[in-house]
Length: 304
Image (tube, rainbow, N blue to C red):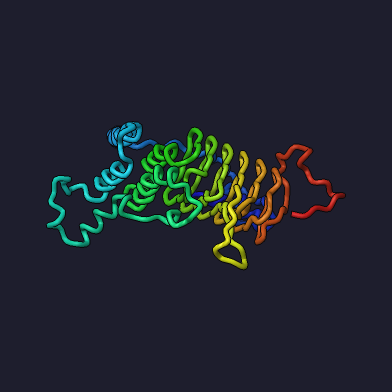
């Protein structure tokens, strides 16, 4: 799960578990022992089936003359209506079935970013079919399969994002806005139901973990005029942890090794190695691994 105990303890201003009766002795030891994660393999037959299917999709995506709308439509039709032949006379099907089939084609649906005037049509419409494919795959019975789902999203990511590093891992119901303004480094893990609003640009460094139900924004609205929108890049540096349900507002810079606690609202920058919690999020401690130059000077007051 994306929920981190350290992030939870940070909320209450305490990471040391010694004072918690329910985490005494062996319990805490077991939690530590279980890290890092176990290797879990699917059966050989299913792994071959998954691999062949993913390879066939990737081959079509790499073919220059392939229409991505058609690719997305075909893949989704195979997932949702595997028994329906492509040669079938669809006019004889019930109206709801025809609607459902039409809705699998990205050309027949609209997504929220299409209504925004700051969109780059060339960049967005190149990616829209694959954003729709990503979303509809997640809503299917295949989406909850962690092994297949991570590999499927990892396959699509280079075609959707501005940049993505190696070993990218996204769990189901991760959603992006534009896609082409999102940069992701190496060994990044994004857990379930995370919203990445890359309208103004999001840059995520290496080895970042973003927990379930977190949201990262890169645009904001005027408090006086709802149609007045400001887009500003949001930066999350290397080795940052954004824990359960945290919100990072537009323009915030989270420094390297920073941690934003569960349910926190980051309205200002998070300094490197600092643990910020609360609404609005403020620094409550500095990680013990921080170099001396990042350790706080108790004689110098500061604001977050």
